[in-house]
Length: 113
Image 1 (cartoon, rainbow, N blue to C red):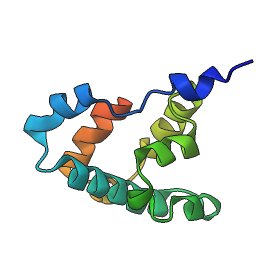
Image 2: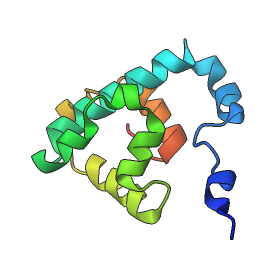
Image 3: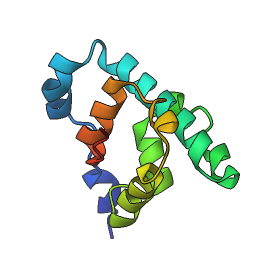
């Protein structure tokens, strides 16, 4: 029996995403690192301490690592994100730059105002 899981794994971020986002980012790699850093800082303020250790060096580990931590894409992973951004303070939201808010909306469908 062959293992099709590894051969059918598609990266979360595709070339089409890079093309779509090109007008909005200065440097895709740098912007993604900043996005993940800001997410880590946000979650360090809003998540229970038992989950924070898993976020260490998130900006170096990448978005695939983050998705694995929250089991995304899945309804459960979306719920983790939705719950994380529901009823948080303006001070907490201010951790995220406008660019990071845009990437959060683009990749996860979470739109902050």
